[in-house]
Length: 94
Image (cartoon, rainbow, N blue to C red; front, side):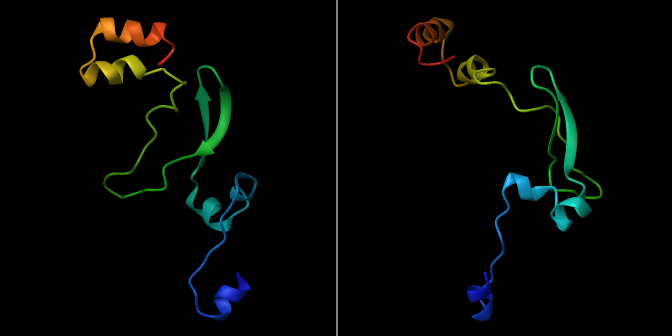
């Protein structure tokens, strides 16, 4: 970083998860929230960083489990129940 900064190159550190909670900007923006997940239990995660006065961002639900919405998405894409059954049987989808 020092070499880049000395030459006027715009740069910033890339935080890993262990670094996030100690970052002053993360603390000031209050985007670390606690969440209750039906299978994973209670844990801390990042909230949306986009915040507008009249239309604030919000988390509606936690991340889905692997395959949780696969059938729903593929039905919306036009696959039939028979096609989904075959894909499940062949272990192509979960």
